[in-house]
Amino acid sequence: MSESCNESSCSSCNVEGCSSRKTEDFSVPANAKSHIQHVIGVVSGKGGVGKSLVTSELAVLLQKRGYKVGILDADVTGPSIPKVFGLHGQAFGTDDGIIPFESKTGIKVMSVNLILDNEEAPVVWRGPVIAGVVKQFWSEVVWGELDYLLVDMPPGTGDVPLTVFQSLPVDGIVVVTSPQELVGMIVKKAYNMAQMMNIPVLGLIQNMSYVLCPDCGKQIYIYGEGHGEETAKELNIPAYASLPMIPEIAALCDAGAIEDYDNPYMEEFINKLTAK
Image (cartoon, rainbow, N blue to C red):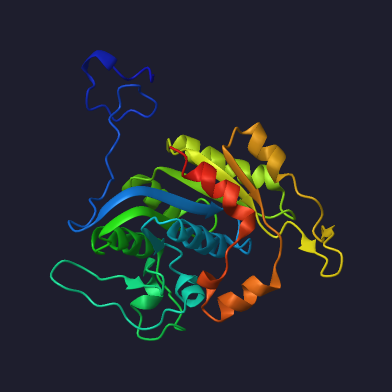
């Protein structure tokens, strides 16, 4: 506690480090027509590791298990979720709020690309504006009844992850990485941010771990063997998955047909993620 602070009389203290200091509440209420059981953030330490793909695959597998699922695309400057699900056009609003798009299997999606006149137009907005849009996607979108809302976040530990952690009732995060990263350091940055914000780390997924030889099925580690599993054990992260690079998935994403693929490498991960 700071020497300049009198703890016995500082119920509204603003002194940095004081144990009695009040924490400002940045939480944002959900839309009145939204009833969401679990909010899970999907994060990564850097771009290009397949975080949006993993978000999409998690949503598809959860939906196929009978859960009601939505995706809030918080990667405002690099939205890719609508493309993966083959969703195009503009969302519309009612007196209740903004109506999210639905995929062919019923996954609800809201993304900045679904409110722009031109989905290829760049989003040249400053951080506070982007953070405001993310909060609007929570408070103004009519999500309805959902078991899981997955929040696809931009890479890093900047404005948007901070906004999501402070403003939404996040139950936990899934960290996505790849073997060519300095995986321990990158994962630990995301882990430590979550710890600072009192957000549990539910799982770690190492994407692009290897390629399967089409002739013999041998695992070929073109980026070197990663250490994701060891890191997950070290940090006591409950769920872990190692995903190969599969050309079929890339083709389905380009065609907006990710829902046509069942990823067998994530079954155990989903079991642990949904365990009561």
